[in-house]
Image (cartoon, rainbow, N blue to C red; front, side):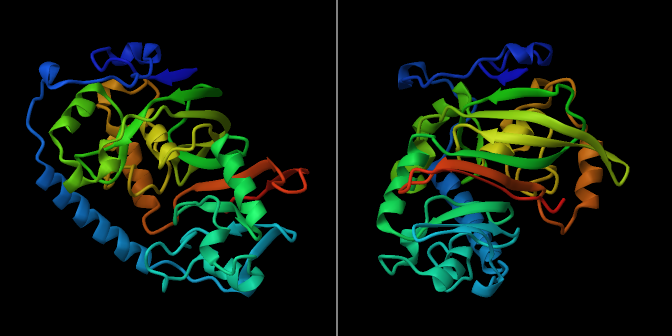
Length: 328
């Protein structure tokens, strides 16, 4: 089954007929808004959230070079398993502990710069496989593989409720959410039009970017019971690799990821990936179920894990594939 979106006027019973909103040129002549959006308000919300995120990053777990879970290494690349709670990169504050720093201290690289090892990243709360480059040739090659979508990454996740269909795809475009900046949401015509009132010099260019086509494929591994609550174990494939894509897509079909404090029940971002309850599929997890699961998982890591990664070695051209077991 494929979930997509074209018109929010369609009822929930017809949600499977949704098609992605295409990028449209919107002029002020056809701009109709229920209320004006003030750039200053968006910036104030964004600044406050970014400060909160910085504080969270400051509490990231440290990892020593000798404690790394090294899955593969050669002279060009290193593949390691990242625990939940560890930053992939330190961001603007180089003093923060990170997986990148531990890998650099243990293996080094050709340019003697740890930022030149980074080819992709996982969110702090996500565990799983991460690839680092050790040579300039490997860095260029891995970047090219990711840009051309020749890297296959599969994730394992527990989501709230029992997903009815054994497999399917979620085809919903994503955008920055001016109501809950800087988080993401499903893009709609109304929310795209609202961006015309915003000033890029205040809210930043990313906020005003066109909607990004986003595709996630899923397969149900098992339907389980967790502390008396229904959950489903899914394999997720992020075909397009957008920011927070898996989190938003799962929430937008009514099955947020277990332990997701941002896009899940009573999270920091818009609920349901920005959609209304009536626009979700019939098998959505109820608010009561989501609340019960959130209570049972309070203080525990989010249940999403980068389980496998496959790609052609950027230098030797050998086909590589690695797997990692989740902790949940």
